[in-house]
Length: 114
Ligand code: 5GP
Ligand code: ZN
Image 1: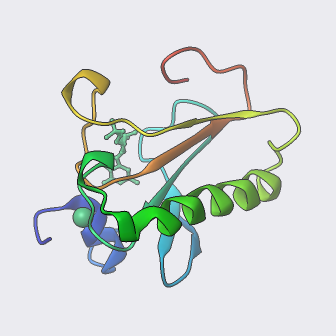
Image 2 (image 1 turned 60 degrees about the vertical axis):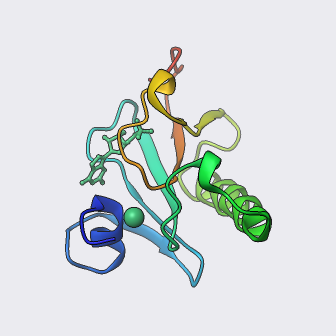
């Protein structure tokens, strides 16, 4: 998707601080972090939101959380804790319509984010 900022990051056409990448997902620093650790875990495949998931995407969503678990350990927040957020649609305030999992920690996080 040419007009998708996360697809541009995946394609190497926009800069990001990338923490992890494999054939299914990429994880990078949120550009406006709301806490000391704020990582976005993003499928390589452009899926607009949870609403746009198909049944074949079920293992991919599990993999997002598996990568989240490993990044939490690497960033030292596994024990202290972190919030995992997926915003879907207008009422959740979804701003980027390429599915992504927020991992937020390193301080006590307030609701909804940070
Ligand atoms: P949403 O509200 O869609 O769940 O969150 C979108 C997130 O993407 C926000 O936390 C925002 O700061 C982040 N974001 C938006 N544009 C960019 C960008 O170009 N690069 C990075 N690294 N993060 C972005
Ligand atoms: Zn995209």
